[in-house]
Image 1 (tube, rainbow, N blue to C red):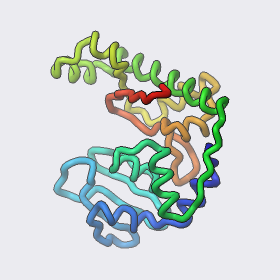
Image 2: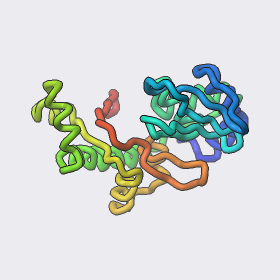
Image 3: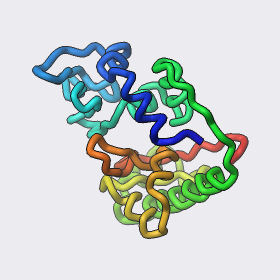
Length: 204
C-alpha cells in the first residue's frame, strides 16, 4: 500500500497547471488560470486553477475541486490507484505497493459502511429528488436494490461525520477515494449531491 508521503512527493514534482492545460484550454487570470469547466457545459469560465496551492476548483455547477490526483481521476474516470500509477510514472516516483491483507480488509469494510450510508441517504427525505429522477428513467426500487444505487447528500461532510461516528480511520477513507484532502490539510466528502453507482471488480 502506498504512503501519504508518496502522494506528497508526486505532487511536489508535478505542476498542476501543466497537467490541466493538456486537457483544458487555460487562460491567465491574474495569479491564477481560468477556463470553461470541462465537467459541465457553460458559457462563462468558472473553472479556476491556482498554481500557488496546486489546486483546482469549479465555482459553477460542479462546485467541486481538489488537487492533481482528483482532477485526473475525474477527467479520465480513473480510480485513485490508477491515477497514482500514472502520475507517479510521470513524476519519476517509484511506488512500492505492499500486499497488506489487513489494510485490504479495512478498505472493504470502509466501502461497505459508505455503501450502506449512500443507500440510506437515497431513501431519506433529502433523497426524494434523486428517487424521482431515477423513477423518471425507469429505475425503480428493484433496480436500485439490485445495483445498490445510493445518493451522496449535498453537505460536504455528511459521509465524513458518518465514518467518524463509526470510528473509521479518515486517512484510510481518503485512500479509498471516499474523502478528499483539501489544500489546507482538512478532509471532506469527495462526492456530494449526486447519485452513487458502486462499481465492483473481481476482488469485490
